[in-house]
Amino acid sequence: MRVFSGIQPSGNLHLGNYLGAIVKFVSLQEISECIYCVVDLHAITTWQDPDILKSNIRQITAGFIASGINSKEHIIFNQSKVPCHAEMGWILNCVARVGWLNRMTQFKEKAGKNKENASVGLYTYPILMAADILAYNATHVPVGEDQKQHIELARDIAKKFNMDFNKTIIKNGYKNDFFNLPEPLINGPVPRVMSLRDASKKMSSNDPSDLSRINLIDDEDLIQLKIRKAKTDPDSLPSETLGLENRSELRNLIDIYAGLCSSDRDSVLQNFGGIQFSNFKKELTDLIIEKICPIGKEMKKLMNEESAIDKILTDGASRAYEISKPILEETKKIIGF
Image (tube, rainbow, N blue to C red; front, side, top):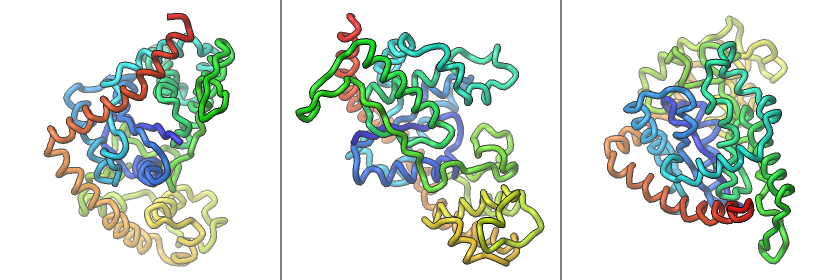
């Protein structure tokens, strides 16, 4: 079981990244060979300030390590240091079909009404994501719900490549297609953490309001402020999940609480049903501070050691290259290069 996944360095790591991805990344270390990537090539599909991008790459790396990912037993690297990603991406561009990309809903959401002004990279980045996965022949990919469609695309590309070239290899004594068909793992205890200010939107580092998210490096005072100002309604908490209908802000906060204490909605509502929103917010604040602040403090410490972070990324890139290089070379032979 080889796991590949990544996070874009397009802003601060936040609670949505942690509950939606990093918690799962950490747990998968116990049962899998894990390759975790800071996907900086994906980040530049929209313009990035070069100095901030460098800082964000280090912050994601620090967040991985502070959360418990072991960079010695597993691999942490940034995508741009391994050229196999871009080269495999071009090959798969020539396998994928335009109609497949036209069905990708995330491009429509991100580009909105200005799709004619969006970068070509934003349109084709699901193919680069497929290349990220197939360059390592990963078997499993932890992703959020919003990325599941992209894993289906990666599977379609792998199927078409296998069919077009009819190439099989021997694995563990059995004949198999060249590319694995990667399986999505809808990651984390909370697959989709929503904005604290608008629960119809995903929590995002791109939201102009810092009050919309809990950053992993936020201090106690800032966490208290953000939860206090989180959008709510005037009613008390229900005792069962049916009472969450049409209360998306409450549902989001309940999910955050459940994710942080490894519980579920039903258990949280049984414990807090009938109490006022303000009292629940205090309990949630205390829990976030308990779980997140130690990670944030360790991240800040690591980010002050830039040379150590850069060494981890360089070492990880070297190890990632050793895995991806033979897969890319065999891919090139198959297509006639």
